[in-house]
Length: 241
Image 1: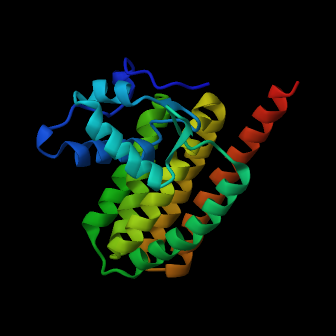
Image 2: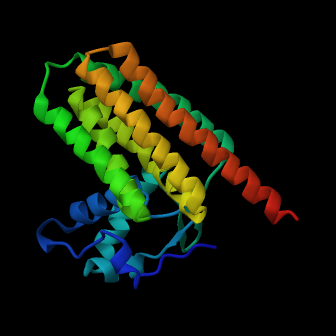
Image 3: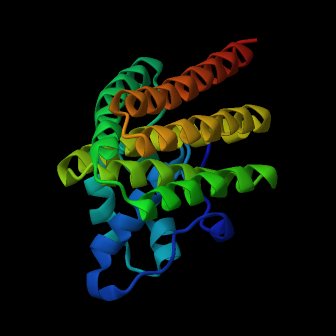
């Protein structure tokens, strides 16, 4: 059972927050941690431990966690037990199908936007950062770079409402992608393949090819999903032996 450890500060981006807007800042920090895969599926979280990391009282953490429970990113597994939503194969399959529709559309929108060299440069920087992180086996940085790349694309679509919906879905799937870190070879293959597909996304946006941008984003989502599904199937089979 994975359990949140407040002493693991070096591997997380959770930091103490300014008391002026404590609840929202705690919520945004936890949300970003989930988006970037800093928590694992089924990982237990403690209000008190999180409050210690943030340097706050338990109250703003409890309120922030309540918002994440409403978004189904965290669930109450017992009277006093909280955990990150676990991996359920059928649920994850449905989330990926929905994400393919929404994120494919956002990529189409990005490819339709006026040409913006700064946007293309940002995408290339994010993609390069993933490869650089993989080369030194810094998987946390690779996850962060992947999240930054995708949301750079989706913001360019110009629909904040769509970005909000996509972000909520990532809350439920980010920890699942992060769980592939347990198999370093698998993680490397998934993200190394992702770097190549991202290059196709960038080229499609440069060419303003809406269909190609959608195909590339969907390939990225689907290929990583299939690899992770096999990872969980194998883990389940091994646990039954």
